[in-house]
Image (cartoon, rainbow, N blue to C red):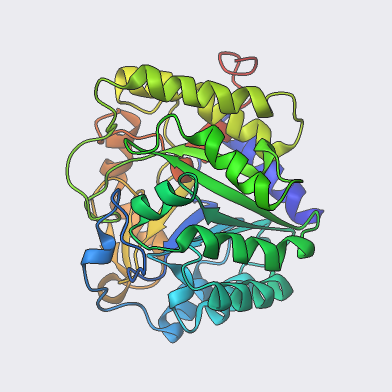
Length: 351
């Protein structure tokens, strides 16, 4: 409860003043991936110079005020020390409230074993997102791995009984040019296996491009000429979650409600909190403002493991973001802190 209140207090302050230290970290602990997604190119590249466990601990010894940790890849569980990384991070960040890990579930036994161990070290809230981009055949085509839909179902079957108020599982549906119009069929396919699953067990986000993270070139958004199809899909999902008072659902509802603005303007619909509320750390120790903008702020090995000097020296980058001269995006990793920082603003309070 204390960590929840600390995070709430931080968010309250962010609504009235410019933050000086990010509270949310997205750490791509590895670039290795055993998917072959159409929407991502990271699997085509070798992941080199990944931070070693002792280097990761050096980072968290100094940077121990994160209240929201998002550990990803590549595929996070391909690191043999995935559990130990999380244990170290959570031990040093004693005030962390939310810990999140997405997974492709290509190797279900590895994933299940890792999650079972993570639950023992988790903070107040641990959420696991199982990537699911459509019904069985479509999902496997998009992900490039035959049988991947079944392995996602295996992971859910093994872990669903462990869910509590502190551990929650969601299916993550990323809207992309290949699965528009297939969200409902994806939900129904899961329900055939697990009748108790509802639309409320799903997350939805929009595909982006990123040269440093996804290893994809070109601008976002990627739905040229198909905005109405995308918005219709979003609205179907919003109708299913809009009456929930659950904080995660409220946050997601506000994220989805602003996708049209993003498609129209190609800009963040709200003042972006990259470098102020959130930060991105790559597997090789390079620090970026976010998962999208390929603008390195520095590297831990070269510039030191304390992120504060890096942020202080890159003040002009933050000013560029505030002036909306960055590439512009609306990914949940960056959008959620932006939504929270504008939650009490009169212009957005009732939107």
